[in-house]
Amino acid sequence: MTGHPAAGHAAAWFLDCYGAAAEGAWHAPGRVNLIGEHTDYNDGFVLPFALSRGTLTVAGRRDDDLLELRSRQVPGDGEVIPLASLRPGAIAGWAAYPAGVAWALRSAGHPVGGFSMIIDSDLPRGAGLSSSAALECAVALAMTELSGLAVPRSELVTIAQRAENDFVGVPCGIMDQSASLLCQAGQALLLDCRTSESAAIPFDPAAAGLELLVIDTRARRELADGDYASRRDECEQAARALGVRALRDITDVSQLARLADPVLRRRARHVVTENARVLRTVDLLRAGRLGDAGPLLTASHLSLRDDFQISWPEADATVDAAAGAGSLGARMIGGGFGGSVIALVPARDSAAIRAAVRAAFSQRDWAAPGFLDATPSAGARRVLGAPGSGRLGTGQVAGRAG
Image 1 (cartoon, rainbow, N blue to C red):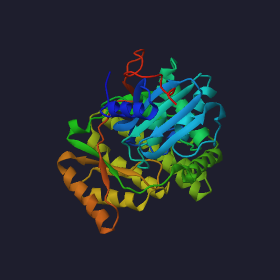
Image 2 (cartoon, rainbow, N blue to C red; image 1 turned 90 degrees about the vertical axis):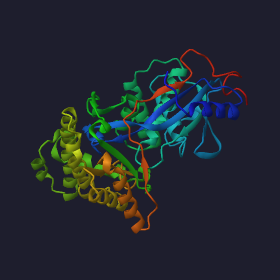
Image 3 (cartoon, rainbow, N blue to C red; image 1 turned 135 degrees about the vertical axis):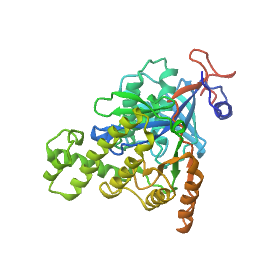
Image 4 (tube, one colour; image 1 turned 30 degrees about the vertical axis):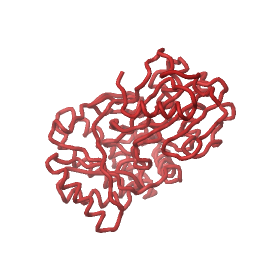
């Protein structure tokens, strides 16, 4: 079983917190969406890959039907939540995500009981790298495996999505949870968000002499504050006006002339052109022509900036600075209004492009950007404690030590 460098320390912290040994540890990665932004909830196509960074959940069962949660990233004594009281909107803040998973599992007929859990993550929150889905997926694997439930990963995707949609209140599509649960090392995941069919697409920038930089602009915006939901609503309005189930069903931008509202026309144009860009990028990757996908990344950014209107100043400055220093293409990623940018760059020019982006931020008196590793990595997995191996170390049953 593949381990995780932080799992041992997290298991020791679990023992210190709860006075009992944990039963296992699970890691779920964050993701970068190479291309295909705001297409998932429009039944379209996306092309994410998993990062090496993610969220670690260390867990043990308890016999009192309580969910006790602690996080290294949130100081304090954590949260104790009676599972019988779970209902949408009942829990606020970070604890709503694991509580929502428990609620969604139980609502789907999967009998999960109480757990003690600790959470640790090396994903920067709010960077557009899907820290929320990583948390949901790590918790979902822990709860189902410790409960002896054989729930297919495809079903866990929809359960984790329902936790975020219906319990937390963020109307996301299935991309983030699919990437965290289904991705493979060295591959991107072509996902048809209507059928849930997926295919592994070779994605190895290093072999092509390239590097995909993930640039955290440090600008933060919460998805639950309404802008994300308003874009989804506008897309649904456009689909209704066009008489189609979803904007996925429009493949020719000339059809959008039927939309009288110029705002809806712009929103729809982004989705239609973005779906085409995803499929073209897949063709290029399959042909071993990753470098030729650079202009598609930049076209995606311009569409998100001008038609979908969800970019932000730091993202635009990053894309411009990277282009000026020799990037092949760059674009914002994530829900918008804050987060990260990706840039496809020749490996030999990586240092110069990083320096150019830093200089652009310094000239504007912005906080320095962060740069993250973007190696296409494996999806969620158990990283400590084999199934059926019992507790990790010695001690009481987790969660029964007061």
